[in-house]
Length: 624
Picture (cartoon, rainbow, N blue to C red):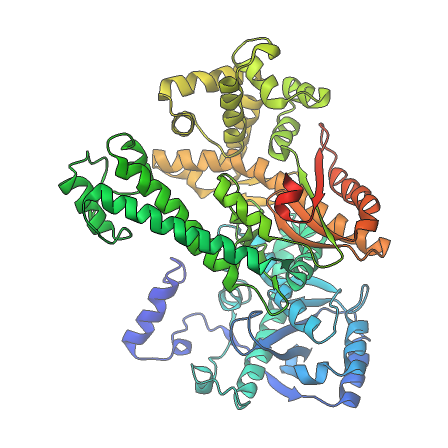
């Protein structure tokens, strides 16, 4: 029952209360995957092993071993399943893989067209093997990504729950030595090795049920053509990292610290006393008791002091403006001023992690650090882009899709007005405003264009009148009138939205043109608000999902084209609809043509896929 309700943490607490081992609480009789591990480490043994493994074309299950966080700590080695039926697993320590003849034999085994390999979170394994000089190119299935494709609504895709769900199997608990007692002198390596051997068996047990599930839902092509090839592209980006000017970052950090001090002093002057500006309780007391400002919203703990509340109080007292400015600067200081400096590796570059299994729409995300959130809206935030620089002897080439979501809407809705505007090369927001407000294109005001732009992008996220009213700071009635006018101007868009919701309600999921599915159980809810949220998700999923799929195809095409050209240029960063490459200045023209072809030809939309290109000696300089 706890598993059905997804009470993961509560189950662990229940086991503690009962005072039993969690593997004793098993009502389903799941088979236990215990490995009979053989450790091989000599050059002769390993070259012979890789030769023998190459004689089969069956998927080879593997699992890496790390001392700490997977992919973020010392890589200790890899476990390979030699015979799953008997639990026969080979453990190979990283030191042995570093031998040139061993790494060459392994690279041959895992080359293009080599033995198909399966793993869980294969990107981390690729990075570990890369450190040993092994280029893993034969990945055929990543069990984590396969599970994500089957159910993108999950928050985590750990191996153990997937075994329970798809294979009626489980892994034994680690030895006591693994529980917080790692001996970095080497005594713990056997624990890491045994854990990895068991996990490799777990991966092997998932191959057949996951492939069958992918096939039954029409997801095999999406997995094989997009998601699996993308793993290596992202792994290469993580390995390369992006260059930063540490001195520039420190200068920015110090200027933010100084600005925080100035704003804090102004806030103290406004309040008539010094206090902890970051304390919600004290701030509430200053604003609503001492200064007697008008409370806007009450929470369980008292009156709210969040950003939305403070913005409504603008003009009532100077402290509000200073507080909002302080919060913006303080966030920049802590998240980027300090955060980016802490992530600089010994090579002077930042190696972020790129995630394929986080966003439900298929969009990529990043963390450690989150480079997708580098601020661009404020002048102060844009300063951080100056600190991102190319390696010596390179320049940065930046390419981004222009209005890809709106082009996806035009394609999916087949709206003649939108398609015509894109084909003619008009300013799409100006053309939209002209139709929505029924004015000549030359007479469109800046305000009208801004409103039209907000509507267009809002539709890509399923925004309705209430959300539009908040964005435009207008009454809901006026926002509804603008939306209605938009749908009169572009009726096929409205029809597409209605059709999408109806199909999702009937099926229980949405599906992109590439076959990516997203389950939306909210559409069947008895709660009106939850149902409305489901409708917004349904409208959003097809548009965002198609844009995500096109961008992933573009990344793969670009990586393959650069590889085929034998160029030393490399793809180092992806941010939203933007890619950043390091290119030798002498190759700039040739690589620009490669990038343009790879991205503009990623998918045949009814409107052109327009790509903007620029270059410079920093991210900021390239973007202008």
